Length: 65
Image 1 (tube, rainbow, N blue to C red):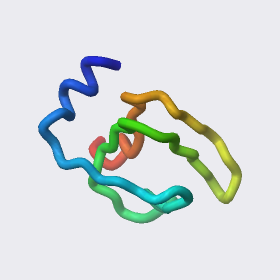
Image 2 (cartoon, rainbow, N blue to C red; image 1 turned 60 degrees about the horizontal axis):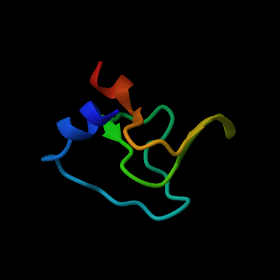
Image 3 (cartoon, one colour; image 1 turned 45 degrees about the vertical axis):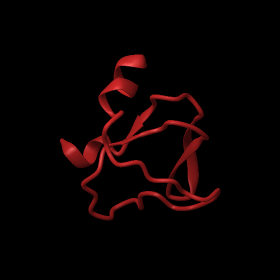
Image 4 (cartoon, helix red, strand yellow; image 1 turned 120 degrees about the vertical axis):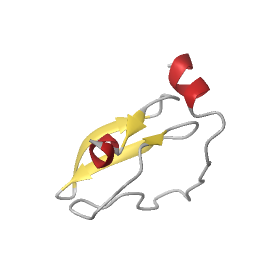
């Protein structure tokens, strides 16, 4: 986890309001995102499939593969 946080230290930070949609299922995406603070809930067809509040958690990784 610390290694991931060190890698993103110099990159752009974005802040989202509670309840905001960050990525939409099926929409084109190009960003790999790393959670620094707060929590992220992942929904698939409006059903929660994951939730994390761990700093260093990575999501959106499919966009860069």
